[in-house]
Amino acid sequence: MKILIIAQYYNPDITAAASRISDSADLLSKAGHKVTVVTATPHKSNVTDYNEYDRNSLIEILRVKISSVAQHGVWGMIKQYLGFSMGALLKVILNYKVISPDVIWISSPPLPVTLASLVLKFVFRIPVVLDVRDIWPESAVNIGKIKRGSALEKLGKKLERLSYYHAEEITCVSSEMKKYLNERTSKKVTTIYNSVSKIQIEKLYNNAADPDIFCYAGNIGHAQDMEILIRSFALARKDPVMNTSFMHIVGDGAMLDEIKLLAEELSVINHIKFFGALSKEEALNKMHEAGCLLLPLKDAPAFRITVPSKVFDYMLMSRPILTNISGEGANIIGRCEANQIVPPGKISKFSQAMIKTRKDWDARLSLASVNREIVIKDFTRERQVLELEKVLARSANCL
Image (cartoon, rainbow, N blue to C red):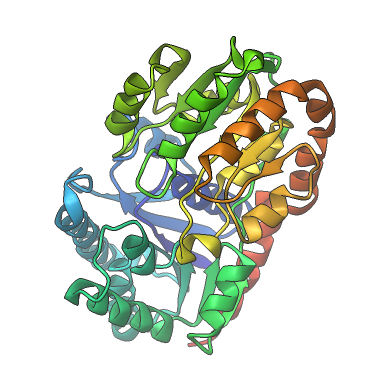
């Protein structure tokens, strides 16, 4: 097959979406398919020179230059999303004879990117498979970026329905999300989990776990409940067992300055190390040297039906995990006795769980190897891409 992938996030950006799309594209290419990726210039990393990466890739990568304005409010985000969507459409039209795809796999968010696939499907008669990573605009409403009942939400809902309508099939990241989509469309929906690659599984680490390090690695945005992390850590440090404990925070995002200020207010800034945005390999190293991995998330309907990609990266590290997520993600983490799941929004519960993890650390570490076993058995990227390949093959024969 000749497969066209349209996705705003791609390596060397360091988001979960970038890893999902990049790994999938590589595996599809290795399976013998001709893969072309239309993506944005890197804007979720510190990378400025990406030309060498693109030259060394076995995949044809076409980049759309976009402005880094998503952090400047909802209108800045919309401007960036529309800029990529229209740029991606133009890039495909200009290179259509060379690409000549049999099928398009297009990843959302951003939701406006589905407008590009709408044109491509009906003008060039190319079947489209829609990849849904987050439910928009509901996710944006849940974190307060879009006001409930606003004209922007209503427009987003219409665009959401349109995106489901014109897709031949849909892929998504969790079984709960599949249920949500099945209630809104008659199209076939397949779960393609965020997962870990063979390269990650085979990676060797030299650093041992330090029971005094509690680590968070990921985006520091509105959806992540970073405030509860800082407040819980400050409260936990009052227990003698936590006297020598540190928190490591790996990542960047819109809430970074706010949580630094909060750490100063609570007098724990000297016990928290901020590493900023690191490469995937560097971030995995930081996870591996931790004694406990932290996964906070705000409680909202749109978040309960997804499984954060950190679930699988964390579990691969064979470390105890402490989280307040719910839904399918909590069910997966709950399969290992080393982990703790606390109710959302409960600072005292999160704090007590930190203390308990530190007190019982040796026992929990010995149990945590089950985390890795679960991921290797059920959640490898290779296994998920085999399912994706079947979806794309079915859709390629639809038109």
